[in-house]
Length: 96
View 1 (tube, rainbow, N blue to C red):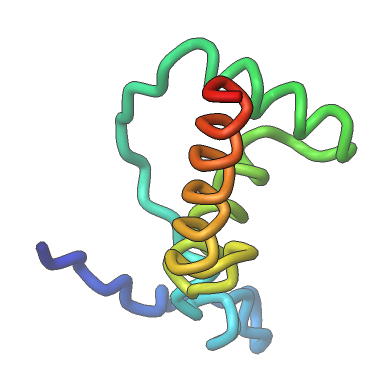
View 2: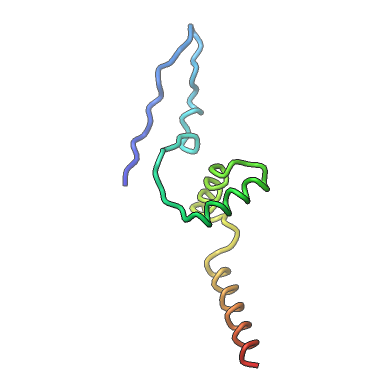
């Protein structure tokens, strides 16, 4: 999928440039999309955002950015290891 690049607008007030090149950095340009999020997930995100003192859209963007940049807290291997430990620990408890 290709996203159109936004060109710098030629907006000036007198001799002063109102928009600088930094206004067009990729992390500052947003694209409006529609997405369906299960109600329980949305309510949880809103609650987490409220506790963190931020907006839920900002929290969603942070979570997504962390996920795609690989800084979401733990690697797939770490998450799988935790899951295996939880499953095998639970299995041992119920067998004993």
